[in-house]
Length: 232
Image 1: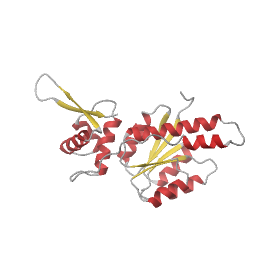
Image 2: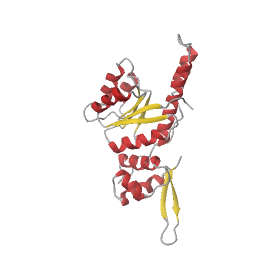
Image 3: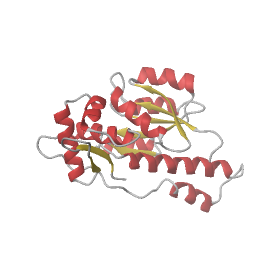
Image 4: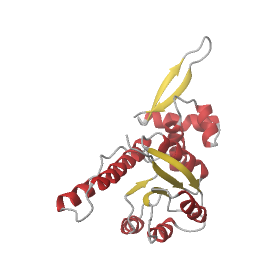
């Protein structure tokens, strides 16, 4: 257990996604979500006030792209670290994020386990750096530090079939992952902002692809209730 939690700021243009990511962070031991921003300008204000250790940064923001925000914050005397979390898949964006010092690049949509693994590898890196003596690092120390950011890969969400959108699939799956226990289609619909029928359709799709688990809850009478929970 670490002495003090790692402070995480979430920056995403969609407040629903930001809330889900904050819930994810809260489930990882040693981390705390200290705030969320839906624009670059608000992100700068929160960085000044809250001093996060790491920012979960979306590339697509309404007032400024995330890469330019990363560049500006990285030039500060005590900059935060960055984990890019975005739908941007083009190689140019990925390369620029790497050049600017992003410790991870997580492509949407993703599972809670994807983010958890990257947060834990980042925590391990911070802890290892803190234990190194002040002065020059040996080559084996450098190799170890870079290697600590490499973690196992986890399955990604399948390419959506006709009638399903990737953003909605991500919201539905993340809503289930962020819940404290099993959830119903009604609860997911309320969390995501879609109809019950739409939530049920997406939940069934994710369950059919092994990304969610389905459990039937039987009451005294009537049909059993469908309850969903993460596959991992």
